[in-house]
Picture 1 (cartoon, rainbow, N blue to C red):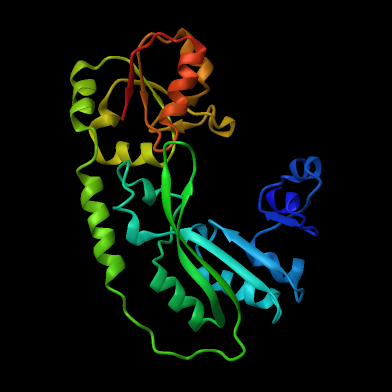
Picture 2 (cartoon, rainbow, N blue to C red; picture 1 turned 180 degrees about the vertical axis):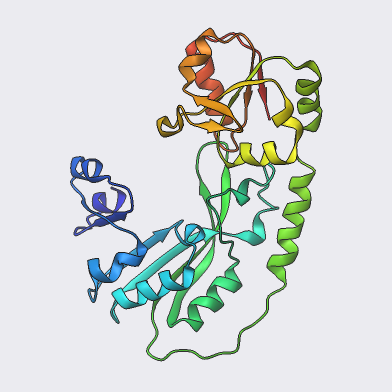
Length: 276
């Protein structure tokens, strides 16, 4: 929408989910597919490709890069943005948040730049930036603007130690960051609790703390596709079930804790609230 409002046209959104109606309402082009389908969708055209927060989710990065190369021509431009692993510790807020289950690749600027060059790209521009996902959380990011190289660069592979050291720093800081005293109190008192936030941050807490041994009545999440499913043998429900709940509401969301607190207040609930 931002691009369209700036005068760009022939915009095409591609996603594995069916968002046809959403794009139709916004009068934008849309096609169901993934990064591996690009050669069949836009092959050989002069395009600008935007991969904003994509490569960190892709299992087979090499296949994704090959798909991009096959769909681009000599005039195509590719923009890539991913989280910056070397600044995870600098932007620390919640334990292991950047190691969410959906983030399976972690890149530094040197590593990704080296990888792109060795796979047939010329780097036009790169840099560090940050993404503001809401008013409370900012994430470190790196970006690259590249084109197809005329000749494949066969430079030797370089070993970068920086990302390993920085990742270990983040792991150490995260290991010390859990609210263990609060969780111990919840465990000792065995009060009935409802846990709001059934994402990867909660999964880490269930695995690494005694939260799983507390008296959890049910989990709450805003994602309707999770309602009725089970986590650790306990059902995930909608927030409407909190209206008859008299126990403690425990918030386990890495990014949206403040938004959840605001929603609880809007619902008029008087329960004790604990944020982990």
